[in-house]
Amino acid sequence: MPPKIKSEQDRDKLRVSILDAARYLFVQRGIDAVSMREIAKRINYSATTLYHHFADKEALLQAVCDEDFLKLASGMHQVMQLPDLIERIQALGKGYAMFALQHPNHYRMMFMTPRAPCNQEITRIQQGNTEQDAYAQLKHVVQKAFEAGFFREDLVDSELIAQTIWAGIHGVCSLQIALGHEGWIHWAAIEERLELMQAAMLQGLLKQSVHIAVKAEK
Image (tube, one colour):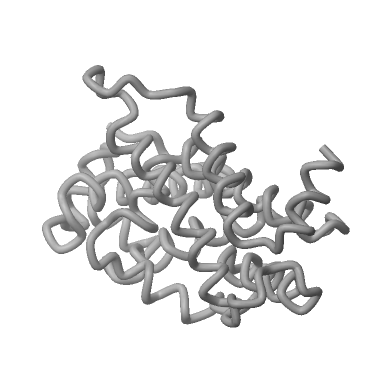
């Protein structure tokens, strides 16, 4: 028998359990293949209980998407206050990677699940909002650095720069999540891989004078 819900705290805990179960099953089996009944069974509740919290599977999926993207963006709020723009770009990359590696199921759902509705549904309340959208945070900082003349003169699209930085960090994180425990690959430490990726990207993107200044400060 599942425990009775006696308080608002119990209700909140149940909601978190539902989201965790849904996220896990969506990643493992695919969104279309998972039913509300299966999600309920995983946490030893009836499907009726789930419908007390979410109108249907689409509403539950939306809640998973909203919560995960907000969790990622909210973790970057302090980083966004850093005065040095290059340091802020580096810290955003590090914070993004920490989120991915500490919450691999969240990350799989957000960025590694084929055709995940999360990548579409985020537009409903979050897209472009630097309080709620981590990509908007990165674009904002890169645009500031672009306007300050930090990037190579032949790079004329700040969004392309932001997407390239994102792609580099995502590549390291997704490889670690998907293959990090495979014994046939002699992986260097994840911290070393992330640091080298960031350094290589900045060396290729920044003007030489800016890159030299950054190295000198370190």
